Length: 180
Figure 1: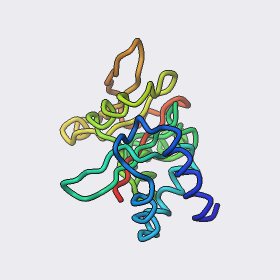
Figure 2: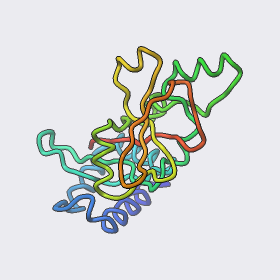
Figure 3: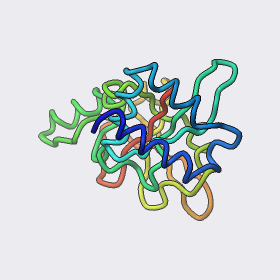
Figure 4: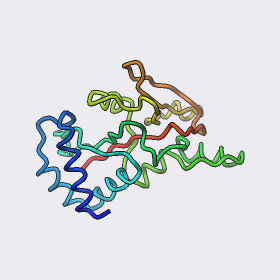
């Protein structure tokens, strides 16, 4: 997909979901994207893996537009993954092969995993992960003990859970955040 095609997709999504970015205009967003080829590459990867990225806020303190994955369910191209490389290697030593890991995939894409706070904020703009779940950035004290954190949206509420970092499921992926 060319940059022009990606910008067209992002523009259409921007106007289809104005509730996610009240008060923002597309022109300045597009200008910023056109000035940042590396960020366009990251958005291309978010789109290619099913994330449906969209602008959600302008962080005025940092003068950055913030994009989240806004696909209705956890991005399909990022599922069946462990939390991080250590968890993935643990599974592979047992002869079980996940599709990768959330932390490594996010880094390769140039994005960050959503935090719990960002995940809860995302739910203000719709009901996301009603059938799937998404790994979220795990506090180091939990990860040191072998765990990792994921979330989903059920019964009108965000639920935050824990699992071992090596676990992986076909219905669990991750959502990312990109600052431009």
